Image: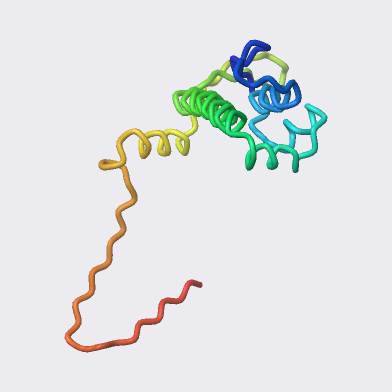
Length: 136
């Protein structure tokens, strides 16, 4: 994952270990991996999250940066990408691949009123009744 994080990112964070975690999180999107890369125990990150409001705000910003990168990648895959394939004789050719699943999720997020899941069940009864639903 590639974000726009730089050594000048998170200027409000003065602790170099905190900044290292934030920058590593920007490239991995995973707390455990970020802490490992930064040489910080994961519990330290959670301590900072509970005791340092500046770190909490910076981590929220880092999460938004990661979300932007993930969203851009999902959009790229939904709209298609080119892939080189090879024929049995070794001749290369290009095919365009798409992710219908990512496209569906992006549409649901962009226009939930139009693309939401809309399973509804309505039951009208005049007296109490017992209903058992079984999944098989």
